[in-house]
Length: 349
Image 1 (cartoon, rainbow, N blue to C red):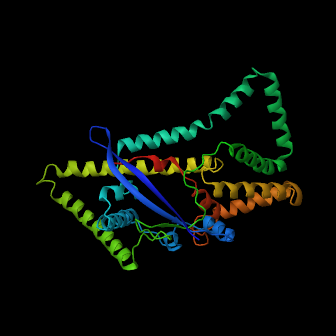
Image 2 (image 1 turned 30 degrees about the vertical axis):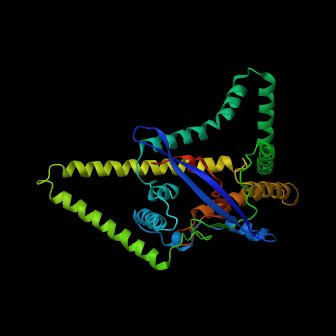
Image 3 (image 1 turned 90 degrees about the vertical axis):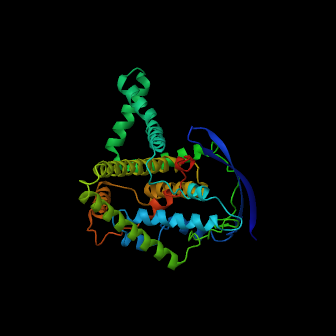
């Protein structure tokens, strides 16, 4: 059967003075469905892309996709604010991350701090390399030189050793993992009080989605017309040119903020896939590393010719024409995208 959890979440808000004040509380009830005997189905869902294929084959041009996503979140927030019991509109936009495309210097600094933290993970590797190069510890430097020479003259052992290294790191981090407060026994989640569908359709019908798309396109056309009007009426309005420059600067700053967010998110997911932040994802990765290490060490031992064929196949995959290339993310990318990041901990106001 299903298992139900109830949790009370205290809400806080940052005021204009920078103070954190109480904003009420939210009672949430979650119902987790058991998926006993459906392990393969669960693993398949982890490997599937987060969006339907049409979103990758026919993406919306320019900023229409971002506008449509913003409008979709506004529709969801308006619907939840009029539900019974009602949920505050600002709270819904905060939970749905409706202000991710709006420039905020505090959020930009948070993304820079996340990127700094990811880069600091590689600091021990650089320190060990500098220690081996300085010969302050002759024994350590001798071991590093011997291992380097062995790997150079036996390059076929590098792939299985890398997989074994990832496996050892994941097993070493297992006792240090953070235990979640609510351990979900299944995969499908149903929001009882809020009304979000398990397939992430957010309760919107196809007609509402089409309406949101038309409104996003109409908004884009109106903005283009406003920009054209500002250009023609600049002689009558001396602030039109200044307003246009300000809007362009804000668009550039927002794009930089989004790019930093994407880069820091990808780096955090790459470093966190062995940290047991998502036990299912980490377990699947470690199982794949173990099987790959066994196969490359026993059944399919690499030699010079096989490595050349492998590198040639990878080169052809990355350099094939756009018409042949599948724009959908690969299964490993879909699985790594499930790893949680620090982005969810940023409070956007």
